[in-house]
Amino acid sequence: MAKAVTRKQTIRRKSSKNKKSVISTKFVVIAFLVLAFIFGIYHYKNAILYYFSFKSDKVLKEDKIAQARIFQILKAHKELTFGFDVSQFQGKINWNKVDSVEHKFPLQFVFIRATAGNDKKDIRFDENWVAAKKYHFIRGAYHYYRPNENSLEQAENFIKIVTLQKGDFPPVLDIEKFPENQSIDSLKVGLKRWLKKVDEHYKVRPIIYTGEKYYNDFLKEDFPEYTFWVANYNFFVENIKDDWLFWQFTEKARIEGIDERVDVNIYNGTPMMLHYLTIPN
Image 1 (spheres, rainbow, N blue to C red):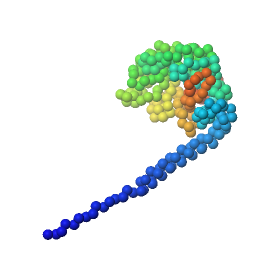
Image 2: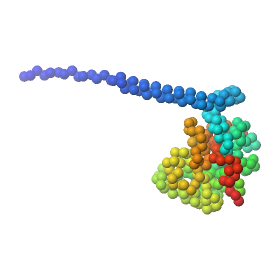
Image 3: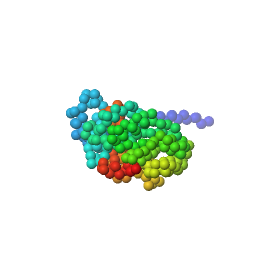
Image 4: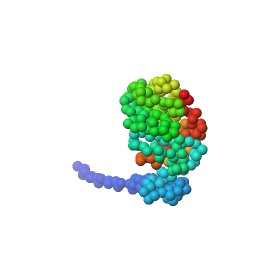
């Protein structure tokens, strides 16, 4: 009978290549972040020096690069027109102090949240709406669209709350979220129903607010007759694009008279051109 041969089990050692690959990837990521930080400081060096030269210790503890970016972008677009937008999340606003960013860049317009969905009214809309007019801002009202609620009921909610006057902006439809129980095509149908109903009521074509990716991927081709207010806070985006009527470039601005951080916007035109956008009668 042949003697059974017992084979030794081969023990495989874990390759050190995987460990080296992980370490290498981490090194690349860290290096990229460090370079991006250095680039940011260098790129915004003049604005950062401005902050370190004139700001208090309290402000020095904040995000200097973010504030420097705001300063530099406004400076680069000084021939255009600046404004901001608010809702109840900014709290009670001391409107008689609101006039500029850094006392250098005058604010000439404001968008105010009026409604959301089919039943929500912004709790500070009325006071903000009246105050904006009193303090001579060109004002606009916007509706936060909820994709999973009836579009016509949402339009009726906005119409019930907002009365527009001569010199106000056209109504604004704010769409940011994706639907849960319907397709994108169905969402677009709902948006068009809202826009049509609001257009028929106010006799003026609304403006659409959205993020840049949402705009490029879903709205730009299907709503060619509308103008867009586009949000893009990307650190490396520094110029308004030709097809943006408004650019919301930050949500971190500090404005005297407002305790919370504020969105700041650039209108793609001069102050005189801005008036042509408003309701004539």
